[in-house]
Image (cartoon, rainbow, N blue to C red; front, top):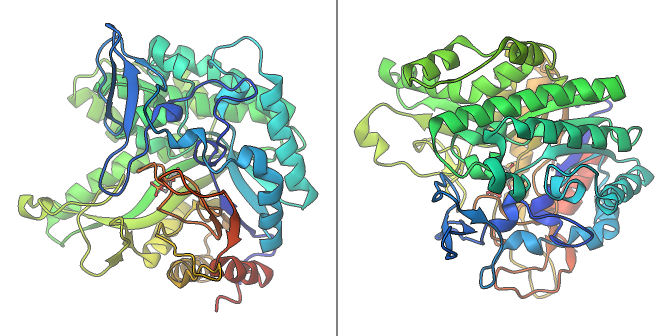
Length: 489
Ligand code: BG6
């Protein structure tokens, strides 16, 4: 059984579903400059060079030429511009979430709707009003918003000015934005998350932090600046309303040594540090020894002032959240490494697991392990704020979508959450499967990789009328919520 007030719901992100990228005063964000990709072709980011040429480069691990000015240009296909047009369909979509019985809905605020350039003096009233309307619509159905302040979009003006998060000035811009939201939505929003998958900065500097460089010092600074901004946002929220709960968000996956060879075990532990570091800082309030040593070994001129340390110590999160899709293995053996394939949390294939078409290995037990890892380390309430199966859905002639593969995936993960709560004593307070309504994939930029309970008729070739349709999983999840997780059949 799940706890009485368990927060069942679903998760989304503004840049992946709102569309309306340039209406009502919205500015351009990093994600608005990312092109559509696919399973076989990677996403690019577009920019203009100093001599006026329009070019693009691969989004992950972007290292742009000096002086590049990022933007959206004619002739490119940018999926965030249309999304699924939640901006104009939010009432219809929220009614469907309510029909499923959602207790919570995870969404993000697009910073550029509120501060179009990131450093504007005054917020954009139309942007503020849009989210107020959405939150009120959710409240109408008794759905508690769970709001991410930064989900893979940074105002592009900040990237073009000073490489966004690589510069300390971005901290003040973000804190002003966060404070504006806390004040405006006080009484409407209780649960906040600061940065989505903050650990993705390590390999996705542009996507996670608007940094158009792989320079290790810039990445280390951007990481510190986001951690500081997150801690300051926690403090601001508590000043506005001590009942506000502010959490972090980590992109997680259980990680195993490929064999019991101590070399594999040691390498797995060390790679785990790269993920644990962020939650260690956000939950405990200080930089761990292993990270400072790593910077020292790399000879980075990294600065963490006394004042920085105080900010981190005074801004620890109220709860911990993470995304969980898969697990991975770590090997120290060069021959095994030649076999690497996966996604953002790359790893060596685990022979005991199956995988999705996109190569993500399915591991429900890994979720129980992860829940235990987080809870024993930090003893703070947890939420699983992303989980799900990206798959191609087929609409039958009579307009049905039989996504039993998705139901199987979610059922197996919910069973493991149940065990973590009831057998292991983990304090899990909510579950919001990813992309509860079909939306644009973050890694590939395509619509074909669908996660939703609700099908949206928008295709990658630009066809489709945007119609919303209930999949089999819609009816199944409704039953799960109505029975508070007891009926998973
Ligand atoms: C997480 C992100 O990495 O995984 C989401 O927070 C993303 O934004 C989700 O969409 C699923 O990944 P993808 O690449 O299949 O969309």
